Image (cartoon, rainbow, N blue to C red; front, side, top):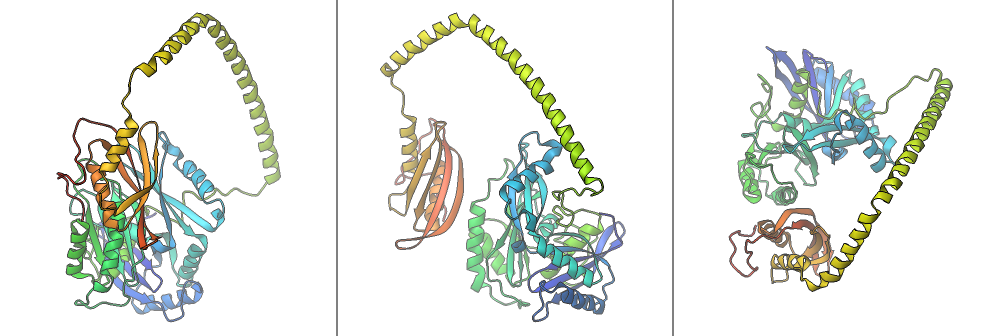
Length: 496
């Protein structure tokens, strides 16, 4: 993306469009204008031409002059999945992810546009955040921008741009919570990349909140959803500075609500302010308020010539376009070349297999004496094996799992699978979420159980009302360290 002297950031939601115009100043950027365009009654992206004309008049009335823009959309319009890449992927990341897309989205591949953001961890494992958006929504955004007299430099997720631009107090992972009128979105930024985006189904009040407006009406629901997401996040890398919660508040949460979330999640939390919370050289806000934070991050990033981590307008997974001239001739040449190559490969492969089979037969004849001796040894060992006792690892594994469950009957298992390498996967139900988290804490504290991971945690209807369905996994690796029974005193206190 070429560096521009002026750039417009548009953070689009279902009820408004936050606009920030940034200009280049001394090698950095400054947000000189900011305004919020509330969608007129009856207006929506379903009529992009009319909406674009209204937006054009609004920008003109507010003094905006930039003609190029970057558009950010809500996470609720997107699908984001983390994909692990095989070792040695190298420069074939796009091809590998294209195959994954063909396999997982075969039915609606043509209706979606895909892009990805690469990730890596200290262990060297590479992964990617695969993001998909409806092609129809992107077309409507482009039509709206065209009607508003704007050229679009890129389309990305507002929360992803905001999470990438938000400064953390340390070098650890940061959870970026974006609260705005009518919605809430969460992103995990770790190891220099966004690894997770989530739309939270919280009834955040719309409109401009007052400074003293209480958040009690929706704070409990927000804290419950955040606690569930945080409990399922992977553990931080060894030696990390610690995870923190950074909040962009445009919904009246306030310092009291921030402190309450920090207490309930057992995470340090703070409210971000513009411009100090945005990682942009010499950035200044034209007007305060978190409603402009995402739009400012979009505009300032594009002004510095940075490409968004995910750009759905310039997808790296888009099918290549070829010229239609000479299509029949090209197809015929391709078929002939493919047949010639296939015939050559088959001939060489048959010759190689014949030589290898002859060599194996000769080697088998030379090893006939050793094979007879090995068969005799196997027969003797098999005959003697029942006379020597072996410790039953499965029984010990079941005992360790049983010790981790309380005796009150608040939680129980419904299925259990133990593999030969002592990897265990089990699922069950509980009367509340606290019972599941208590068992998870005891499993993690058990020195005989390794790689304890929660697989899912969700509400499930039961015979006595709402129940919690869950699944966990671990690997049994016995040590000499003792592990107390549930009714004995333990050094690790259960989570409350």
